[in-house]
Each structure stands twice: as structure tokens, then as C-alpha cells.
Image (tube, rainbow, N blue to C red; front, side, top):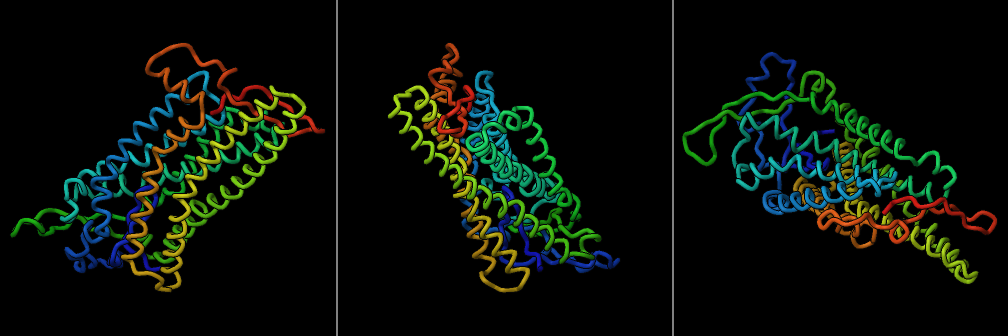
Length: 400
């Protein structure tokens, strides 16, 4: 696979209009081959559409994400709100917040202040790679798999509620979250050591007859000797285990949850006919919680699936030299996909506010004070499947 120049905001590559020059670093004279044209230059790496998105729209969306997701975390971790479901939702909010916040210095310096027109200064080369590519990928990977965990947990609550008493506990959710983050870090570990950053004197593109120290990013010798195998393995691993498997799993789980909701609605009608209004109300509340989580997962799929398809096409194109689309087309598609993913980050807050009375009441009390909302009025209930024609309730599980 020929590796095109790429950068990975939110774990999504922005593809350039040309390929990087990769030299045999085992050759002691390789530095003689380097030129200023191999220096890191963002104007060549990004399509023109990325400039207004990254420089002006993205900082506003990131600020909104920080505000809304901080509020989500503050509400969900209130004592009366803590539950396995809400701990997962808080973890997702934190992951999305960090995925957006960490690249913000790069957006402001290079795109808002228009330094992208120059070669990247040497002092910015490592921060650029860490803040824009490597670290956000870890948080985004964690967010993806926490979303899968949310769907799995809700499926267990609805369809295997007896097992939920053992499996779906706050300690288990915390352990699972830690495992997700450890695996996310391990999946990106080689990215921190795969290249070397070399200083290079480059001409200023805005001031005549001036030069400054830029940088050249090159494969380390152990990567250069196995470049095709290494990048094929890394990118195919990402496509399969960070994009396709989670997305396909979420489609299946969402389908199962929707089917369970329909069966619960039928059961609720039966309870109403039997004048069992209390059980019917609790079943309705459980369905509302499930519907809200289906909406959260549906929003995730709406913005993530296109990126997974783009990445699959791009890597397949590079692996088998199919030339399906030009690098510029991939760059534009990726920039647009990145924008919609960033746009989705603050939207969960509004989903929670619109679909959960308990969340709204707790949110209001963050600012105006007052007693904790009564669980009898607001909480959602965890419902066991019907057993011999009877619906069994396990009591309030203070989820949204």
C-alpha cells in the first residue's frame, strides 16, 4: 500500500493531494535527498474547504461541545443519577469532549491565524502530530467502543434482565471503561514512535529572502524496512476493529432494541386492558429510556458510518491500486465527514434534555438549587421480559 500523506483529527484521515516522499533511512546519505518540498506544509495537505471548517466553524463547535458535555457529566454523576447506564453516558461525553478539545490549539494557530500557508515550524511539528493525529484518535476510539458498550448494556437490560443484575453494575462498567481506554491506547501505541522529526531550513512563503527552521517527518528505520506490511496492517486493523465491526454491531443491536420496544408496546396495551396502570406506566418509562438510547446510537451511526465507508474505499484503493477516486475527492469527503462528526458531539445534550424529564430536572437544579427530583416522578425503570405472561419489574434503575 502506498501511504498517502494523512492527518487524523478525531481519528479520521484528511488526505492530501499528493504522496509523501519516503526515503530509505538505512542509507547513511539519505539526508542529502531531502528538500524543502518534503517539509510539512498544511496548505498542501488539506483541501480548501478545510480552512473555514477548521479555522472558524470547528472552534465554535468545540466550545459548544466543552460546555454541553461538561454539563452532561455534571448531571449524570450527581449522586441520585448514578447508574451503570449513566456512567457509560458520562464516559462517552468525556471522550467526545477530549476528542474535540485536544486539537483546538492546532485549529487556532494554523487555521484561524492562517499559519497553514507557511511550512510548519519545527517547534510545532511534534505538537501538531500529537494534538491533531495521535491523541484524539485514542479518545475517539474509546468513544466508539463505549457506545457499543452502551447498546450491549441496554440490550441486556431489556432482553436478559436477570443477567443484568450481575453483569450491569457500576463497578463492572468502570472496569470495562478502563479496559476500553487501555486497548485504545495500545491500538495507537506504535503511532507515537513510527516516525522521526528532523529539522530543515525552509524559506518563508510570505516574507521574501527569509528562512526559518521547519521539519521533515520520516519513517523510522524499523518502519521503513517493512513499510507496506506495517501500514497495511495498521489501517486495515483500524477499518475492521475501530470502524466496521463497531458500526455493524450497533446496527444489529439497535435493530434488536427497536424490536424489543415494539414488543413492549404491545405488552403495555395488554396491561392497560387488564387495568394494570402502574405496570403499564413503568413499561412506558422503560421504553422511553430505550428510545432515547436508540436515538443516541442512531446519531452516532449517522455520522460514523460515512467515514467508515470513506476509509474502507481509500485503503482498498491504496492496497489494490484501483484509483476509484482522486486524492482531492477523498480529502473533500473526509473534511465534510469530519465536520458532521464534530457537529454531533454537542447534540447528545439536547437529546437528553428533550427525552428525559429526570435529566431536565437535575440540570435545572445545577443552577437554581432545590431538592433532588423525586424518583417516583422522574426515574425510569428497568424491566424484565415477560415471564409466563407476566411482566416483572426490578425497581428503579436511575437511568435517563
